[in-house]
Amino acid sequence: SQKIEQNSEALNIQEGKTATLTCNYTNYSPAYLQWYRQDPGRGPVFLLLIRENEKEKRKERLKVTFDTTLKQSLFHITASQPADSATYLCALVGNTGKLIFGQGTTLQVKP
Amino acid sequence: DSGVTQTPKHLITATGQRVTLRCSPRSGDLSVYWYQQSLDQGLQFLIQYYNGEERAKGNILERFSAQQFPDLHSELNLSSLELGDSALYFCASSTRDNEQYFGPGTRLTVT
Image 1: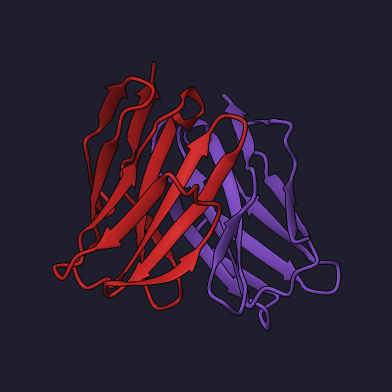
Image 2 (image 1 turned 45 degrees about the horizontal axis):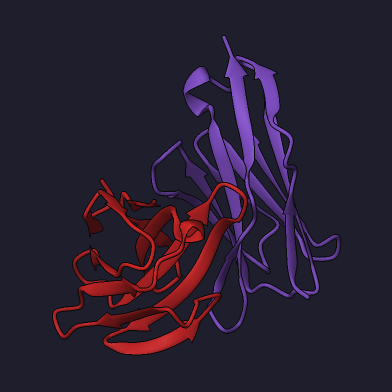
């Protein structure tokens, strides 16, 4: 069955460092992949979308890569700040357009 | 502010009861999605409507139903409520690329 895996352990890093979050998927050929940020008790907020024919996408301090051979996406936040602390969700969109979310990885940036 | 509104913000009710959650999508968006998020399950897709028609179904229980009205607002009806239905319920609307914009959610507590 289709499966999306994100590291369930929280990622703790020091302010100013680069945070790297991983999203792996199996039994799936997504047309594109999305990353969302979610703060406690609030709805997810769309960050970035990357298509299957794109290797990399950037937006300000955010960078996403998409490797369809490895079936993996990496999400990087450079020069991280305490305000970046949140849970980050990856979501895959298949050809039916249905969006499936990973469980999310919690990032904690310490000052 | 995503432009998606949900009411009520909080709902406390007893087992066996029925509740209705309401959602208004962003102006111009024709699709409405409903998600359930509980601590142990992550964000689970329930159902999607597009311009009044059901488009896709996820892990939605038979006790749950939804509809989208001509003015594009949507309602999610939850009946015969059980303790396990306690969760955050999110509504989202999307762009053509399926970038989802989430509402603030309704926190349902079943006692």
